[in-house]
Length: 140
Image 1 (tube, helix red, strand yellow):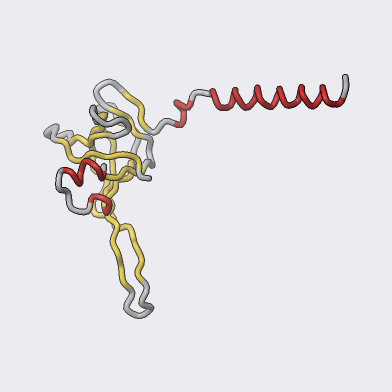
Image 2 (tube, one colour; image 1 turned 90 degrees about the vertical axis):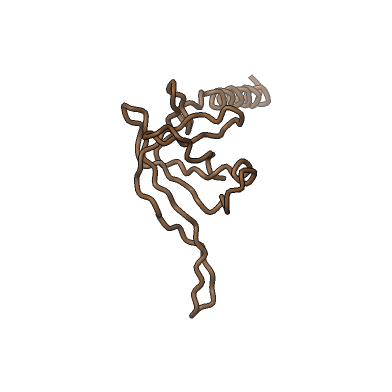
């Protein structure tokens, strides 16, 4: 074998390995998993209000609120979420303005379902009365 043929074989092997790595199912990395009537969202996922939908519905500053998933899915399909708000804080001594996260609602249960008309978006459902609470998507 010549050196150029060996390099070609190595390149071919690299390409095959790369294709295999790319084609591995990404289900293990999925943040949303359909479970029948509800959707399971990976613990730790940060969800933001769907700005396009909420602005069209007249929501006030939808980009200031987000939720973090704090539990795995329970037997009844609910998951715990904590709600946060982004606040602008001005320091009078330094004159600097910073944005901070403030938790305003601790670990409450909710269901998630797919937003039927918008791919990649979810609806948070109140498990007590089945009322939609918010339209959300993974924060960008």
